[in-house]
Length: 340
Image (cartoon, rainbow, N blue to C red):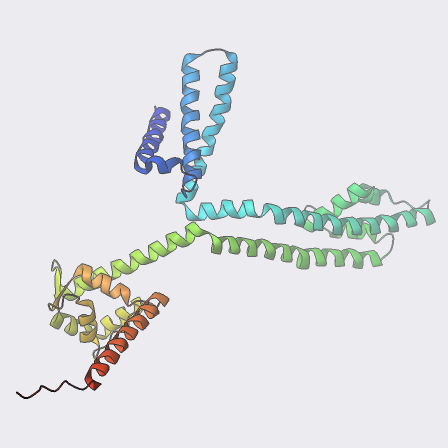
């Protein structure tokens, strides 16, 4: 029962989105175009599977239905855009595939060089002392692939690196120092650098995630608006829709309220409370509604924007032009009336 319900719910959701976006639903320029196409394919494949299963056409059709059933697994991808952490983790894994290949190549190069050195020392020892029993070494260093595998397990903790180091010490005690240096370089240096590369890559993905930035900005704006509405309610009183000037000035006298304004990014003090109220009161009727208060305070939060500075310069130029015209008019001689 749950299966048809979920399919019907997904279908209704898709129909509502198609009705809402109309022609933009299939517009490649739409930012949700890929998600829309993905949802459409999932819904159609699910309905196709149900139709084939109910019709019971033939064996080949049932095989197609089994393949379509695999598409339902991809439904989990649909929720990624609604969960920030999940989306970032998936994007981080996908973006780390290329650095992972380079890391594997680097590891193989280093392990290959060390393995060749170990094998060369082992071959020289067998050549100089053919009667020497080195059967314990052959188990871990019996060839190039086996030697590289032993070095890799020593790096990653598959085996204790002390065991192969002790075996190599039978050839030459200096091999313990060589093996210890290889483990120190691999674990303390190379693997930490590789981890740093992956961390930096994940950090860059988080910073460049457009959807993440947009959602965080929208959430921050909504929090600021809620704080302003709560502040208006504290100043005007519960259930009151307008705030008078004397109420606002008296409300700002409290240091707690000043700190609250400062938290939102507004420097409101006792001496500038009336000036701020007059700036917010666009209609100049001595009262401001909650919408006026929220919009007015939002305009004064943050640093001056380039648009605000350009608008101010434009208004200053207009005022200067009017003053120049007024001065020109004042300096012109008045015409004398002729006496009759």
